[in-house]
Length: 46
Ligand code: FES
Image 1 (cartoon, rainbow, N blue to C red):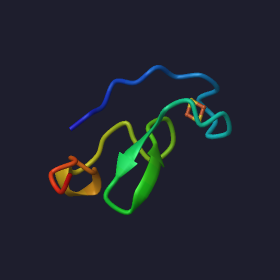
Image 2 (image 1 turned 90 degrees about the vertical axis):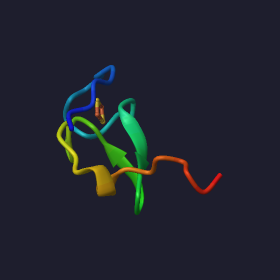
Image 3 (image 1 turned 120 degrees about the vertical axis):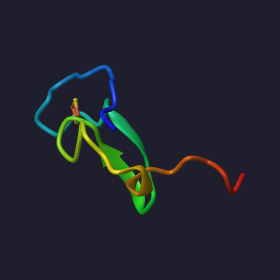
């Protein structure tokens, strides 16, 4: 799936596009924008 997120620097430095990943925060502009479903934290354990 591709995430849409506001992009600031698009270089991985401002952290303005960070979302919760399964293993910790991920940057949509660098690690994404395409993620496998299992790479994201869906908050199902909350
Ligand atoms: S937009 Fe700056 S880190 Fe992603």
